Image 1 (tube, one colour):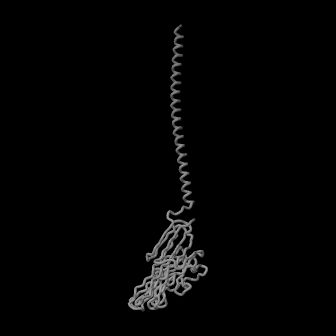
Image 2: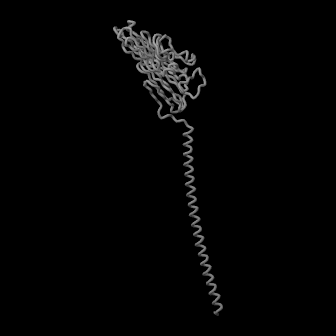
Image 3: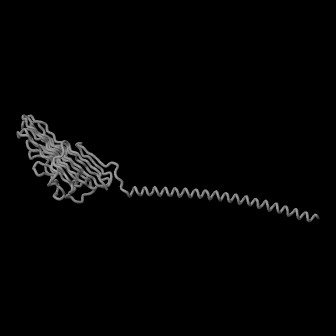
Amino acid sequence: MNLKTKQIKSQKGSIAVYVSVVLFSMLIILSAVFLATSSAMKSQIITAVKVKESYQADNARAADIYGDLTTNKEPSQKEFSFSYTGSLQTFTAPADGKYQFELAGASGSGGNTYGTSYTGTGGKGAKIVATFTLKEGDIVDLVVGGQGTCTQATAKDGTAGGGGGGTFAFKRISTITDSRYQFTKGSINYETLLAVAGGGGSQDCAYRNTNSTGYNGQAASYKSPNNYTAYSTTTKAGTSSSATSSTMGISQFITYDAKGAYYTRNNGRSQGGYGGGGASDDNWSYGGGWCNGSSSYQATSWSLDTSATGTDGANTGNGYAKIKWLSF
C-alpha cells in the first residue's frame, strides 16, 4: 500500500470519528432538550391540574355563597319572651317570615278594705294571639303591662284598686303614609298598633260595703281595622271621672310614655299599672287597653290582624309578650 493510500484511509477514519462525535453530541443535546421540554410540560400539566382543582373548588364555594344569599334560612332563635319591666322593650325580627304574637294584659288590684271584712279582687288581663309578617331587621316596640296596686287608706273613704296595664306591640316604620293609622312619637314613626291586650280593672269595696271584683280585660270582641276610627277619638282615659292623670291607648303612649294613672285619698293610693292602667277614688278603675269595652269600665284589646283570637280575663299578675317565628 502506498503512502497516498494510507493518507486517504487516515483521513476517512478521522472524518468518521468526527462525525461520530458530532452525532453523539447532537444526541446528547437533543436528549437534554427533550428532557427539559418534558419537565416543562410536566410542570405545566401539574399547574393546569391545580388550576382546574382550584377553579372547581371556587365554583363550589361560589355555589354555596349563592345558595346562602338566595335561600331563606330559619333563624337560630325562634321564640322570644318579654316580661314586665316598667319600661319600653324592643324586639328586632331575626329573619323574614310570619310571627305569632301572644300578648296578655296585667290584672288589676283589690281596692281599699279599711274597716270592713269585705274583699276586693282585681279583674284579669285579656289575652290576644295574632300573626304578622315581618322583614328581617323590622323593629317592634313593646309595652308589657304591670299589675295595678293599692295602698290601704286610713278611712273607709279611700281609693279603688289600680287597673292593670295593657300590653301593646308597636311596629316602627320609616315614613307616615296614612295618618289615620300611623303616628309619630318623638322622632320615631309607628304603625298604629300591631296588637294590644287589655288589662283588668278594679273597684273599691270598703266604701261600697260589698265584695268587689274589677272587670276583666276584653278580647273576645276585640277592635280591629274593620271598626277602626282615629285613635285620638277612640282611646279613652285610663281613669274614672273623678281621678286624673294619664290616658290609655295610643294617646297615653304618646303623651305619658304608657305610665299608669294614680289617685290618692286619706293616705290611700290607687296606682294603675304600666301600660295605661287606670286609678279611681271609690269608683271602678279601668285597665289599660284600646278603648271602652261592652262595660263602661272595661278595657278592650285590638289587633291589626283581623283573624286574631282572644280570651277575656286570661291572665293574673303582670302582663307578658311572647313572639314566635312560624314560617317564611
